[in-house]
Image (cartoon, rainbow, N blue to C red; front, side, top):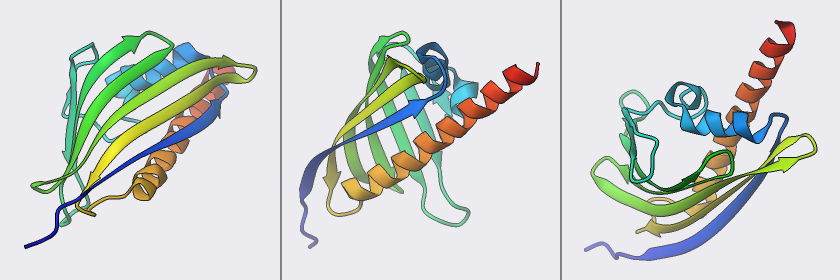
Length: 153
């Protein structure tokens, strides 16, 4: 029998984006905008108690399932959601995440905090933080593209 265990951990990522908080918030709250930097949702109901759900993975590889419930939404300021992550049929983590959007000189200071329980060694806080940093970098790239398009119009 495999030993079962839970590791509780928290990580915080801060990013500066050259876009106002309103635009960064839209990148999280609009399904089309979010799909440019985060896996496209199969279900996206952005409201308190609403659900965001997606399944996917590499061709021929394992299926990852992201199943989130929005707990609090303060437009242009904060989003709080809880989510589970499954690998095929196995639950690998449960998290509570807060994305805060603060006015900054250059635009927006994003403060992303994730508090998670990582189950039975199938995922680690280091792996999750690494993947999240990659996604938040993609968000920054998308915001830069939008800014460039607006300047050229």
